Image 1: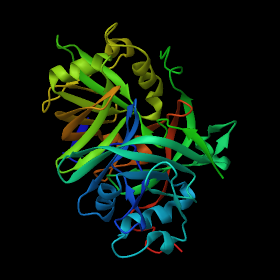
Image 2: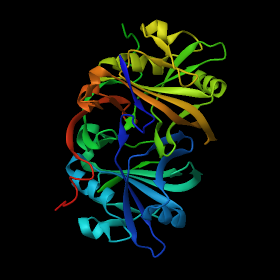
Image 3: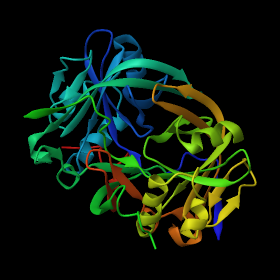
Image 4: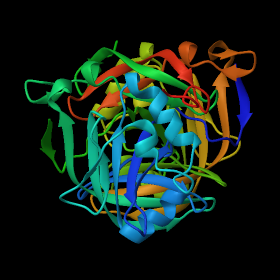
Length: 188
Length: 188
């Protein structure tokens, strides 16, 4: 029997994206975003949503670019810190001992210490209500060699986080369950 | 050292959403979508992206509504089947022994056997290129009692799937790592 939970923003999984941008003075900043995901294959694009009140919102409007940095389970405290404090009040890279690397492809910094980064150029801005949805065209994806096996990203090495928007907890992406476009060919 | 992977649609986690809709004849259909996620808190909204060539694309344009059904790990074969075959050729509910329940809130069916469903009314349609992004306002979230603890969704009971867009594999959402807006207050 299904119970009604109400018109809430609850679905699984939601991501833990650490979004990098430069503010109007060129200072690198990072924000933590759970509302987002891939939204288009051609051009390869990624969507993130931010409230206008956030410091990163203004930075992305200014710089017309952003990065999405994927922390691993070992970096959960840093990711959560990024979501608690504002770049308006402090330099979060400095506070966390993280290194801002200037992207050579888009006008945004990425986090050197995080294992996977996606560099995006802003191509659409949609005002949806409380949140603005920024659509970024993906210029490149970069991954640390340590999270790759035979030239391909290895999820079990990457160990990305997911966020539970109902209970506000972080969860590990765990073991391999099956191969897509294969395991379900004969489901019975 | 980071390696360039190219301008690909690779980020983690991506979801495994089974999207329900009615076609022009009122036949319930389901599609499997990895491009999507929550995109706005007020009104509570969820985004999914579909190619115009898919059967569900036309159905959603027609019915102006959709549901997002979250399968558990035990339902991985059914979810994958949904992603392999087209509703143009067959009734996937019947093929999988699943039950289409008519939503009382939106003009779309949901999957009775899947533990979490999100009922959405289409409010925006954005043409992004190969994919159309459908933004649905969330009318309700419903969950099986079996995946709840003390009236709240329990991720360890829900056992949602995630998809790896690099290696095309399904992975389990695993154990609790830490509490959001808390674990990172003092990261050092």
